[in-house]
Amino acid sequence: MSSGNRYGFSKDTIPIPNPKPIQEPYKIPEPIIINAPNPIPEPFILPTTQVVNFTFEDNNLVGWVVVDEPPHLLAENMRSRWEIGDGPISGKALMQTSNIWGDKGDTVPLGTFIIYDLQTWVNFIMEFDVYAMDNDAIGIVWGWWNRFRHHRFITMIDPNNPTGAPPELKGPFSRIERRTGDAPPYYQTLASVRQASYTEFKVNHFKLEVNNRVFKVYSNNALVLQATDGRYWGGKIGFALYAHSGVYFDNIRIESIVPEVSDQMYRFTTL
Image (tube, rainbow, N blue to C red):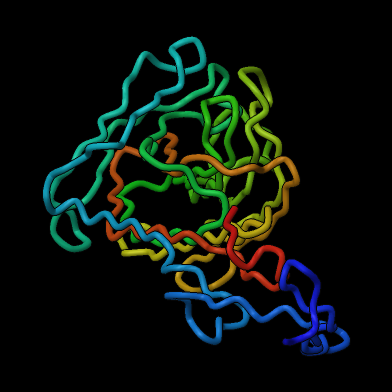
């Protein structure tokens, strides 16, 4: 009879196998990433930037909003005439044919705006063609929120306008300005040169580059002006005119600038 107690249990010790020793230090396995690029490019490349184009061949001005300076600022009781028509550039074009101008003393070139109201931009490149049949002021507008808050580039040939301005503020000139309100001087000049940036009765190509609050304006591939403004936070884009009774805009292209990402903490984020 085998050894044991009266209940039949053995009194002998049953050996237990030693567990497999844990490696030091213990390493947690790498997680498995499913449906992810392997390896992930460095730095992570964001999708293609958004581009907006306008050629006006469809006779469509959807999204464009006209804003004239109010009558109490204008020298005459006039209204702008923005429309699409056959132009001298290439087929249809955005045109304006009213000689709207101001202010009351004709000291500052005020007139009319047309703004693309369906999108805002912060950093971008805007290019377009323009054909002028007058020698007064043509402008580009950006950072637009309203008449009191926007930036503009404005350029003029006419040496007699604005008629009430001192000689040093008459044409020809090119300026980058920020709107300051509804009272003189209306704009603060950020940069200026005593020369116009376009030629009458000729197709002129403009480019506006806005990046990190630095503004660069090119005319026919030459840099005209550059300025910086820490108060800029983006907005809508458009055009401005003063006393210009015949101008055509066409082949407008606006492309957002997506900043390069070098910090790994922000590889999968956007502004």
